[in-house]
Amino acid sequence: MSPRPQPGREYVLTLSCPESAGLVHAVSGFLVRNSGNILESQQFDNRLQGRFFMRVHFDVSDPDADLENLRYRFGPVAQAHRISWTLRDASTPTRTLIMVSRFGHCLNDLLFRRRTGALNIEIPAIVSNHRDFEGLAESYGIPFHHIPVTGATKADAEARLLELVRELDVDLVVLARYMQILSDDLCKQLEGRAINIHHSFLPSFKGARPYEQAYHRGVKLVGATAHYVTPDLDEGQIIEQDVVRVDHSLDPGDLVTVGRDVEAQVLAHAVKWHSESRVMLDDNRTVVFR
Image (cartoon, rainbow, N blue to C red):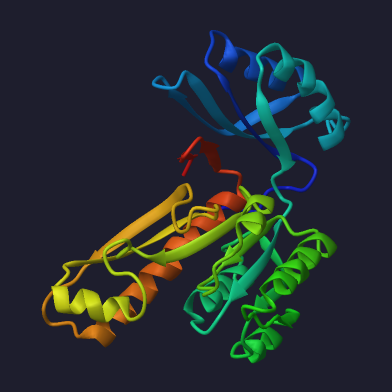
């Protein structure tokens, strides 16, 4: 495992802008002027759309080059090239609220990865419309919030969720098999900072018991998709996908087991890349600097 970034010394700059000559030079010049040393740099030029994307992980040796000063100094560079950008301390964990219903494999996986240091996230709360995983949350010392959802209480439940997001200064909301459809308004308020996971059978096998439907069709691939949450149900910008080959020897229960493993891994990748500022939105697509 790579060493943890040094607080106050390592930063991640992400940017997107119309493509033009001299962009890399402008960024590298900014780093040179501020005692920056590039640790990792990735870029993508979307020639079809005429847009440039870049992620730079760097450290600084000048003690005066703190986050506030670096942001101030990069302002004129960004303005000159019409750059949309973020600059953050690479060591700062992403404050992540996890939502779950009655399938706990993704939740359990994220909690374990956080405890072992595989994910640089902080989990201030777990929210569920059921109490099934209250004990699991307690075992990790994480506050558990039971917010039941019915047709009559949906609006109040979503209002309470947004209260928690604001009160706990949440950066990211993860729907770790949370089996409730979010309202269009809530999706818009969480735009770009809410990630969902689902099996890859959509749109073929909708509704209940998708793995049993897949079994009866004799599927040969089981997979999962992690994407940002948007008002268009299960059609947000895709962050990560993966598949596993299966065959006739697996019964519906076996397919479920395989599917849960893939879901957990795909969601963990998406959360990791988002928390490390490796995912950038490109209209209906994403640029992922893995």
